[in-house]
Length: 329
Ligand code: GA4
Image (cartoon, rainbow, N blue to C red; front, side, top):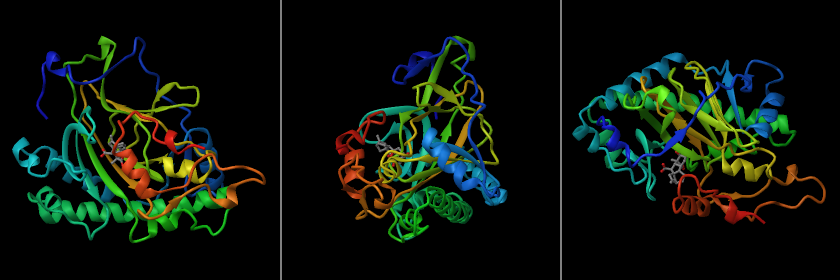
């Protein structure tokens, strides 16, 4: 990404913070090896729609290898990276996010997780070191998917619903509409930390899918919005994963789990790299509250829709829009 003068930052959004954002030290942490993990997950999803997962079982080799490969790609000349774009929605993107005018201090790769969908652009992405990058992505996604299935199965146990694959089956399905994003937020030295102005890397939004599994390097930037509408900064932890509840899971739990609003601010000095697996259902899947979760006499807060309908409507929206609004009863 080119370094812009302060004037060149006009197209971006800023957040004014007159006092330094405090790090959110009470972030819920779930130890996957803890026999109580299922209960803690459910509690965190109800309160925040977000938690940090430790003892996750994903090999650190896969994680660091993918980070190295991703940085190799982002360090290529702009003209090389552009061959893998623009994102439609898959491919390389720079500053523009989605089709409706959102921008951020970011460059990224958006990929389909389905190995059958290898577009021309994905091939261009892997052009420089086809074997290394491609296999790093495959190894990582395979391991993270497996962990995400287990997380959803533990959540079902914690919710006391059966069968325990009632949520995970949608991600396990070979037609699951899941995707994978590798983000690079370059440092923005024009913005001094003391200026009280923070540049938005990825604007506030909720994820439309069931769950998202995020891992980042050790650079701060991720913030989540709590129930009382306060933005809190999540301390980075490069060896852990962060799990986000998405809109579809909020609907399936009839609002019991919160789809967490989050955003990323750019750092003046350090570059941030994150990778996120977005686990979504098959396109034809009907999304509605799970009947076993509805108490007697409890009505559905949402109209039933298919994942395909929701995605179409999401791609007509702006990042910060409340996308579930039009599906509420
Ligand atoms: C947010 C979550 C994922 O990053 C994503 C994003 C997608 C995109 O970048 O193409 C969207 C955004 C995300 C929600 C609303 C629409 C679609 C950009 C946008 C403005 C890949 C996704 O699935 O939805």
